[in-house]
Image (cartoon, rainbow, N blue to C red; front, side, top):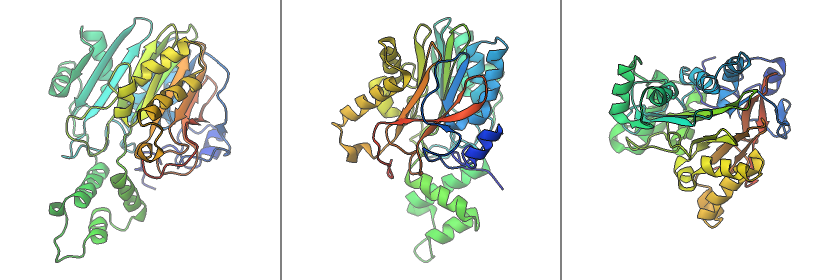
Length: 379
């Protein structure tokens, strides 16, 4: 079976696959009571590495580095690089869903707790491993952020390969989006339109047609944040993304913003986010969560506090809040972890939102705490 959906890449047969220790799982987000999902965060343990659910199959890579005494930043970057390289995950790196002009633009940031350094890139085209590029900015320059064509040229100078990041799958979905949003990109009034147009693009694959229609109606925001703490208590984090699908070229969300999509304090913990980055930027969510943990909140409660601030910006108006979704993830120095989602489900999918953890035994999924218990069918 051909794999192509960002969420289907890691979540079908989760219960049986996780129990059997299989590295890759393919499916929809799972119900809260399904086997293989922790209903409460584990007690603190080190080393620990966590990510959004689409990093589940890659956490072994990072944990192996941690167990061998490697640097925490190398561990998280190696983890997300697996996902960036995967053409079947259209939320990051190669195969990411493009901007409105059909160009894939990537953003990423890193923070290294032990040295209190950071690096970031935004609106990068033609270089797929932008988490590693952000790490290179941190290690090889006295800058924190490089953007646009300057970031691409810097990457080329540092030996990164240029390539076309648009896969055939992501190109077809972009064409379907163009057909749905512009009268000039679909047949004229003398031709039967939408269903025939979708069939022309995807053939008779109803699953792909359904997925395309879903992401056209609700443009995905993608992203994979990853954070790790080693046995000594050193912490690092990265967040990488292809950003909001069909965005205006040059749009930048929270992923490359230090203090929003990624933040680390080696004395406290780390936090990251997925979902609508604009809402996270407005509350400096990564920094907010770490400060809440500094004052004694658990990672989960700190994530909920960040969501409360987003809800407060809309006076708790669920009608307005239902137009988007956002998720926060956090670890503390003791190896405790937690995550929270604005709504109970992941986007319009059934079942509770989940995230991925590896505490040295096996990669598995844990449930995100929901700020609103309702299912959001719009954001």
